Amino acid sequence: MGLFTEEIAIDLGTANTLIIHNDKVVVNSPSIVAIDRTTNKVIAIGQEANMMQGKTHENIRTVRPLKDGVIADFNASEQMINRLIKSIPALHRRFFSPSLRMVICIPSGITEVEMRAVKESAERVNGKEVYLIHEPMAAAIGIGIDIMQPKGNMVVDIGGGTTEIAVIALSGIVCDKSIKIAGDVFTSDIINYMRGKHNLYIGDRTAEKIKILVGSVVEDLENPPEDMSVQGRDLMSGKPKQVLINHAEVAKALDKSIIRIEDAIMEALSQTPPELSADIYNTGIYLAGGGALLRGLDKRLSQKTDLPIYVAEDPLQAVVRGTGIALKNTERFKTVLIK
Image (cartoon, rainbow, N blue to C red; front, top):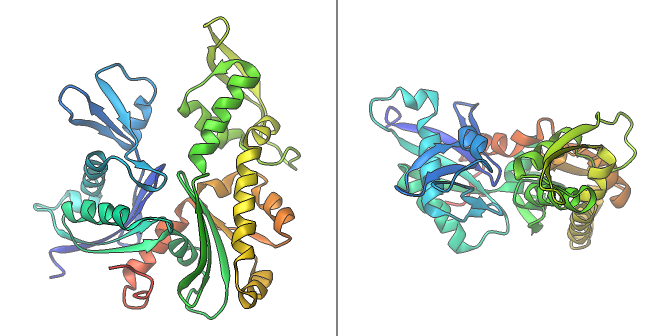
């Protein structure tokens, strides 16, 4: 049996898809697919398709198969998962494709129908045994929290499509909140701000770059990043132009969305049973996901909640690490995994 079965853990993200095989992250690629409109065939996936984004002609379209953490384009997502699995070095050399035991993580606010879509996608790419795990749960395991303990922990996972907030105790989610304000919304906030303030029209890739290089949620940082020059199209004259942007401007652009995340955290805290609230007062809040890398976010949330905030080490991989650990110990985590 072991000869023909491989185990993989997948973090199917709106922005990035990560795959763990043999305890190593073997795939870390943007969740994006380029499709030829005339033949409907996939030309490129991942990084290669990402380079094409915003630069395509009418015969090519780039699609992000996942929206808000769930499958929006069934066909594209299946082809993407299939190709990513085939690109795993160890499976690439195999003469025939092995059957797979997989653990896939899903947002906590997902519906039955969306769950079935993920499951069917996995079964079509030769998934013989498919388990699902909720993202905040996977993030907690990946951060290193012992989820079996009768002790409350709060995890906030800010991904590309959704922000997942959950209070976890006794290997279950006691109360959770999933909102569709996350990395993608931050990107469009930056695009709108550049439009309104600088009359500059920029694309998604440029906005993403601004978010990574000078992204901040507070205006006064101890060691601020250098200003960044941004090129785009002038909305008045139509000519290409360049402006300088600093972290304080990005903080202004993101302010409204961050307030909504703060409100959601406060709401989750207000629904927490008192005994668990006492635990959270002592343990603080854990941040995971790409959004946790925004400068000053821990400081800002700490001021709002009056609690200590811890950012996971390598927050981008916390969820997939947790998914990998759950895959290795399916017996131990069977209460958490959804068969």
